[in-house]
Amino acid sequence: MFYTSVSYNRVPFSVNSISIVNGTTPATQFSVKLATADADKSLTFDVVYSDGGYFSLTNVAYAGQTFRSTGIINAPTTFSYACGNLTLETAAANGLYNSLSFNSLQIQAPFSSIYKEGFVFGDSWDCVGFVSPAILMGLMVVVILLVIIFIGICWMMDINTMDRFDDPKGKTITINAGAE
Image 1 (cartoon, one colour):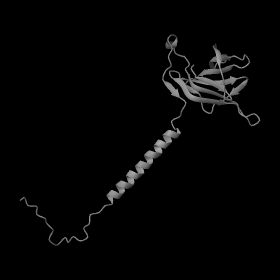
Image 2 (cartoon, one colour; image 1 turned 135 degrees about the horizontal axis):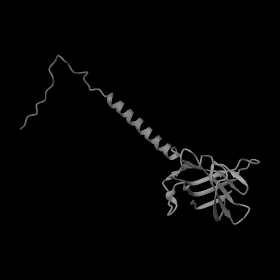
Image 3 (cartoon, helix red, strand yellow; image 1 turned 90 degrees about the vertical axis):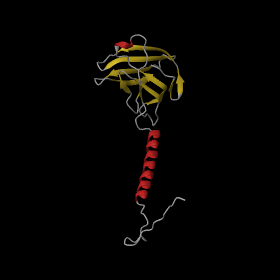
Image 4 (cartoon, one colour; image 1 turned 120 degrees about the vertical axis):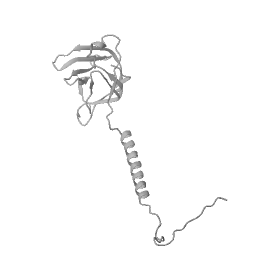
């Protein structure tokens, strides 16, 4: 697990130690506990392995509150999950939300035996979806350019030669280009 900073309601806190415990339920592979300076406030989450070859983070809790993500936090077991800014929220209580934010989070569950020594993160499975505002704007520009090209080609195909004054029965105009 790697992250540059973690904050609760925009207040950063530091992690003193990390401990990993085998799962207590059949679905949970293992649980991770990040201890902070305040013994009552530790960050815990479960790593669950699914039959499809994916691992996911569930039951994220801090200071007795359970947090949820807007999307699914999962990745294939050979990949690492990476997210530039991951924000988790609690359910609304009195119209207020509590947030837990990670900056530059990268995590990989070592389910394979090749990770026992010299662990390095695998390829990144990023939290940004396939459609982001930047990708949508790029597609919009491409569509606009294709429409302009289509209209231009249609106009070029509509060009007609001026043959209104040509007489098909008469003599054609010939211009001699003699070499002198």
